[in-house]
Length: 83
Image (cartoon, rainbow, N blue to C red):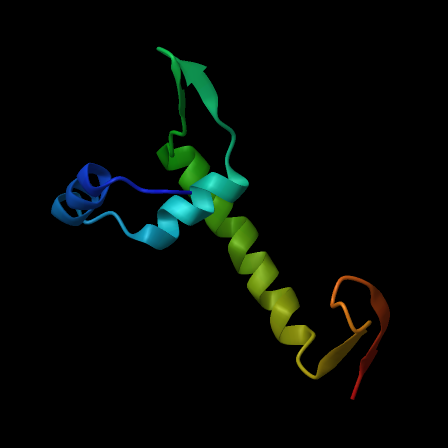
């Protein structure tokens, strides 16, 4: 997503991190309102997403040592194994 200088300034003033914008862009639904798309992070949504992230972090730790073998273009998974 491209971010305007105005948005960068407001994010800086309000303490909004770029990583949160990236997360919202990729994982949260948008609502079309007043001729623009809007993403809102409510307290309930934040709690639910935090639970999902914690569960994923646990799964990620359990997969330490896993290797994925890709083709030369890097777009096709050939095999996966644990060391």
